[in-house]
Image (cartoon, rainbow, N blue to C red; front, top):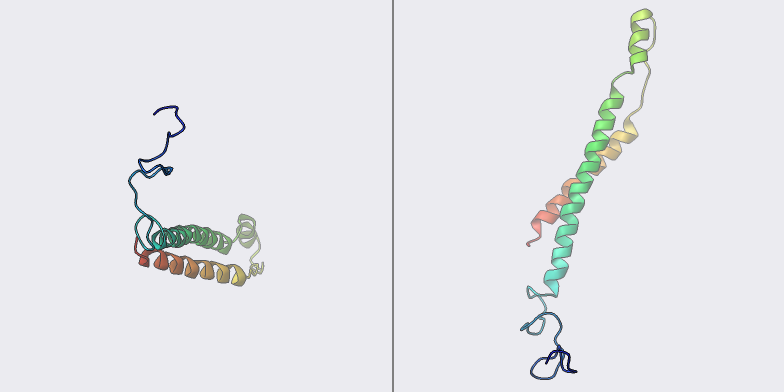
Length: 116
């Protein structure tokens, strides 16, 4: 049958498509339907939560590094006692980091709650 016009066709004469012996796809079965959509949601939320968590970690590290005074400021403090420490506002970055952390926790929780 190799090389003939009927190659790739089953005994009934219909063309086979990759899944040998696979029956019709049913909604909610392991082969397709709702299970495939659930898997995409599960992986999207799980990995999205992990990526958001990494982004939040980077923001918190950046915020922690900005909280420490610079070397020039520390040297100036020791040379002149009357130097006013520089006032930095970290409110916006802290708010963004907190929101990213909350989103990462929410996405991860949803991703882990969806059954595989």
